[in-house]
Length: 394
Image 1 (tube, one colour):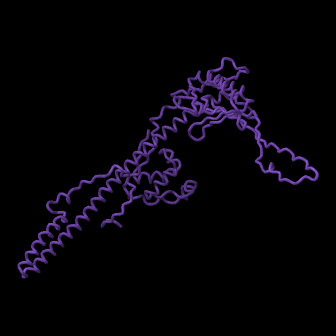
Image 2 (image 1 turned 120 degrees about the horizontal axis):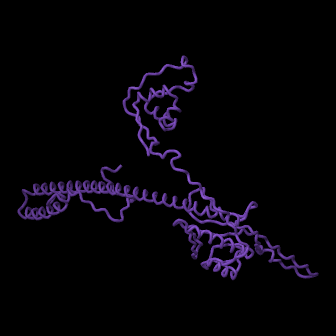
């Protein structure tokens, strides 16, 4: 698909002074910006602005050629690997005939029959008929649009099943399976909200005692009315720019857009799949990067612990050597004392020497000092901050 094009600095220098940069870049297969950047990086002088517009006699002379011999390479598209133009005929997109929604519901789909039975018995809440958790088609509508939504659902389901799409209803949403991708489908009506004006206060009675009107402090009462405006919404994580909503407009109702909606199912499913594959590839890259980071962190932690062990053994060895020197100095100081004192000194020297041997990392062997084995705990993630300081710490 791609190939490497290589020039020596002298070859590229001669070419840029014989052919304009824009034309030369097109011949190579790169942009003029990339070519100019590569020339500047290699130290090649380019013709000044307006050079090719001047007559040949008035053009400045070519500067000295470069002396550097390092090759200049470009990665360009190998057009020989591309299919010949016109070799593969372009298949025209199939033009789907317009879908007509019937005026009467005949032999409704089982999902539509179940939805009708549920929504006709549903109670309204803030203008919408509640069917949440009933395992029926997802629709937020008022009672005025039940028949219309039934016709839309029935036509859409039957036409999409002809294309191989599968409909499924769950507790949470209605799902359409298109090319192994799942799209959430929902019909939503836009309602109009109005404030119910409070009733007028009663006329005050003559000589009656004044009483505060607490009813004026209550929150306003609201009512919702149907606008008849429907929108079909698709809930799916697709790439940016894909249409996922179809709404009633002045130029057309949802019923007139079912052909576009079915085509949209396919394009959205392709976009969902492309985004999912991209996310999976990004996740694999993140996992690989995390594995590399953890491996580097483990190597650094192993070196840190080995350095810490080295410093610790050095300090212990120095302390054991100082203890032996002190023990020998004590014995020499008591060499001319009484026999009882010398016996006491000998007992103390034996005990002190055994303690110095316990402190000395080189006694009785050096295996603990020269070992490079380090065990990293399973919980280690490389983010733990260490408080130990050694000679290599800043």
